Length: 332
Ligand code: FES
Image (cartoon, rainbow, N blue to C red; front, side, top):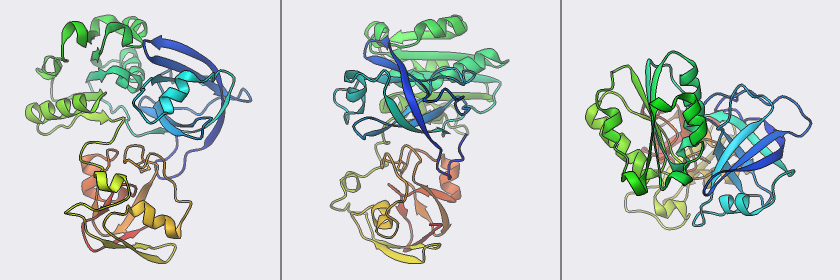
């Protein structure tokens, strides 16, 4: 699997087939265009997919890591989204070739004696391979899986086969909001909590974990930026917030020193000297723009790094991050 700071390989993959997984959820099966074995991956990994329109999107691998011939993705149709899922759901993709980067894993499954998985909707996709690994090993596990309706919840049959007794399906139309505490209460200190789903669910799990286990943060993966991580003024590239300040950035290897004014992103300014600096989501959620910090204190605003990684300050996501001081030195 690719190191997070080196660009992952670009693969030319063919869409072998598309499969209806649930109401509003389309599965994509991808294979190497020349029939080669695919790079290995571990639960939690995702792919960056360039769609025929040129849109670039990130999707979790939700198949079996033991299958080196096929990658499987599950895509929720989001009519109010930015167009990627609409394109996937409304195009005839079977047989098309797609450029794909990855796999990259920013949501790895840490060893634990017990796992509590909490999935909301399409958030099941990164958790399904984790459940498969936990079910194949010696760790105890449970999954609380919510969705709008039962028929909108993908992979129910697979979950039943992996250990249905450990799975609680809780569609909102019949069960109401997910009862997070029913999963968290009584967990031993050795348990690991994993959550993926809508922002509200993740915020609720983080809040309840903070109250119940102050020393142990849950492992979460977001599909959209955390509410406070991307100021609206920076997301649009115009205007500046009341607390925004300009700062200086030195690109040590390039020898450039640039000024980042309020209202412009660090990535935007870095591009003046390095037009090909990698980026993808530009919302602080994919990790593509992760950059080593050589000096200075980053003002992290991403949803990729853990709190410990943010505190260490060794790397940062330059698409959303800024500087706490007047100068930042980057390894670029
Ligand atoms: Fe995705 Fe920066 S480009 S985190």
